[in-house]
Image 1 (tube, helix red, strand yellow):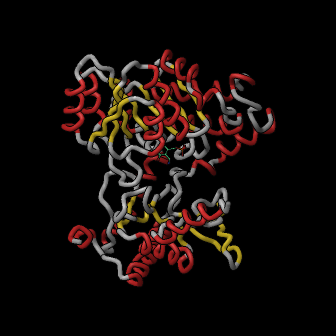
Image 2: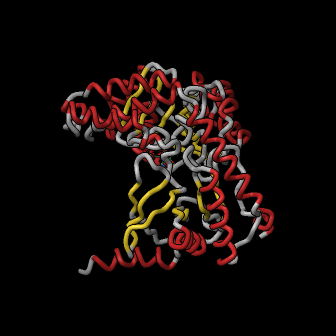
Image 3: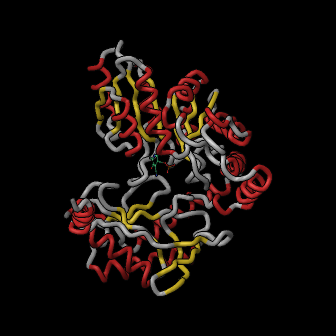
Length: 409
Ligand code: PMP
């Protein structure tokens, strides 16, 4: 039997749909973010990265890099096993305490990624609640969807950020049925924000638990970087907050924070925690350094917002179709997978600007886009160069200028 035929057919389908993905071979230059070396087919080239989720550049911060090196030198690299088998390294304990404090919760629990936190966290929580109904926002991330699926619980989907629809489902479920409302605080592809206070109102009125993914908000919003929930003053009203160490904190790993008993139960039952090696201690020390720094320094947050606002203003003034939102995400509408890929290729090859195309299934078909993520380190000159390059690419590919044109299509 030629098993290979199945894989080449699967890849062929992606090529036919013009959404086969290619990753550029990049090497960031610490101390010089967002500059990087692109190992292109014709040799190394300098490029500027405009699509990193190391939103605040903490991955190059001397305190963060220093903490990682110091811990690696002192205690070595890996964790040496699952926590059940090999115990817990002190840097993990310190990091969990830091995270619990960040979110004003009794405890926090680390996982090897934000993806695993959602997948195993939601599945385990919901399974432990008899007859739990999960109410999931329509635009929830794949990791939450997988967690919901794995829980085996009944799931109902509420239209994205539609409180009236959520309320209808809560009423229909009745006051006595256990319910878990699952949503994100900041949706990473459109950059829109969930009405967390109103969701908490509904949860309290109808007796539901709340699980909020703050992956694209921790470190960046709230006076200490506690996320949108901290900014909106509702951290204490959300039962389980989930976050990542891989974006604003510049490292790797994920976590949930909640009441002690909830954390203890997930720790005791979640397969995605029990059966996998713990995070490396040096990563945990680096993440702790990033969180500590961002609790007291607001320079990165303010500069980040300032840069995002400037990019939006300049691209909008140039007539480029920026999709509106009030956050740091700058989605530029393309609406076609092939053009999206071509735009990305032209930016990289001809302008030394790296922006990965965003195609289905990351976003819905027909809403393909370039997702631009400014950082505190993108200066005015880089922003101007970005706008000029985009305009040239838009013209070259015959793409529509201004979002009014896009809405009319
Ligand atoms: N939640 C959301 C909303 C995400 O966008 C992502 C990944 N980008 C994750 C969870 C997974 O986080 P991580 O990258 O730490 O696995």
